[in-house]
Amino acid sequence: MKAVIITIGDEILLGQILDTNSRFMARKLAALGAETVQMRSVADQKDAIWHALDDAFAVADAVFVTGGLGPTKDDLTKNVLAEYFGTELAFNPQAYAWLEEMFAANPKRMNAYNQSQALLPRACTPLHNLKGTASGMWFEKEGKVLVSLPGVPFETESLFPREVVPRLKEKFHDLLLRYQMVTVYDIAESDLAMKLADFEAQLPAGVGLAYLPSAGFVRLRLTAKGRAVDQLDGQFQKLLQALKGLSFEQASRETTPELLARRLRESGVSVACAESCTGGNIAHLITSVPGASAYFKGGVVAYANEVKENVLGVRREDLEKYGAVSEAVALQMAQGVRHITGAQWGVSTTGVAGPDGGTPEKPVGTVWIGVAGPNGAEARKFVFSHTRERNIGRASLKALQLLLDAIARR
Image (cartoon, rainbow, N blue to C red):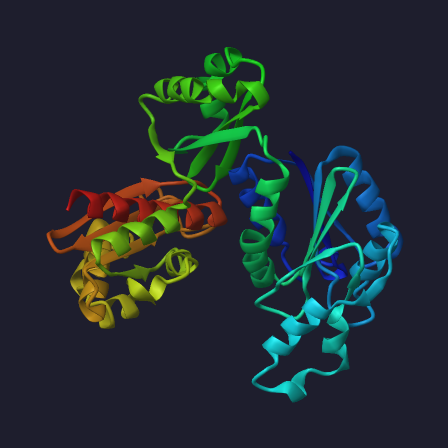
């Protein structure tokens, strides 16, 4: 099944909001075995939406549209879809019943604009939105499918797996796309590509390798399509052999924060972080996973030396003797945050993010990362890059990886 994802909204094109719906749906579609061949964003304008639909149906079996389903006049998606499928808007009793259910606790809040959400194209099957007033819509025409969902991310993230995925499985029985992923650490994308040149040269038709670089690591996605899906496992083993000598991890489809979250929950332990050069980014990564309150105690952004000393308990003599960017300080930061929060594990970063502040002994990109746990503490030194954003990103992910390793060795 080939898919196209279209997001509708001037606010996306103006850069006022980030389109997370496309990423979410593409990942869910890939997990099903579908191939997303296009993503695009268009304005809240009839012609723009119409042309995008024409282009999408020319290359796809299924088109997924988000946005433009609000009750106000600037939301045009329902009207355009009704005309596109040769039908009209009509009162839908099922959609209205869902609205009544949503406003049951306070019926007076259901005003005329809310009630207008029960007007849907006659040709669609309504999809129950438990999180908002705009119903999703499922259309079929000449063997192809269009799914229209709200633009609000948490509404789409509720609707898609619950209402859309089961229908896709029923409609498309022969989804033929599989992939496996591996994460390779501490190597540049170009160097990794040179190391894998011979592996890529022998790949059979229908099997391809994609490089997905991020700060501190490169994800490799090995994808097989059609009849080649039976060759995926064998080729993946060849890929792992080609990576010998590098630091890599067979990735589930979990991100590093998601993997850490699962390990912490399984181990029943908690963590806290003390950050200097990463400025709170580690705490952000940890709390980006829902349910983090079960294992994350908190964090301290200790940029100034007096905060390291007065809050985290770093010894002044060590700050003066070794400097803030040192093994001794990283160790004491990790131990200190563990002590003040009561967490079983503490992780710390102290370094020179850049672009200024480096010295010949401690150039920009130098970072010490400390991990403290029930059996003691350890710290490691890294020298990343000359770019501030990369240094913050790489140090944050490396801190989570070191924490994962320490928990696994416990």
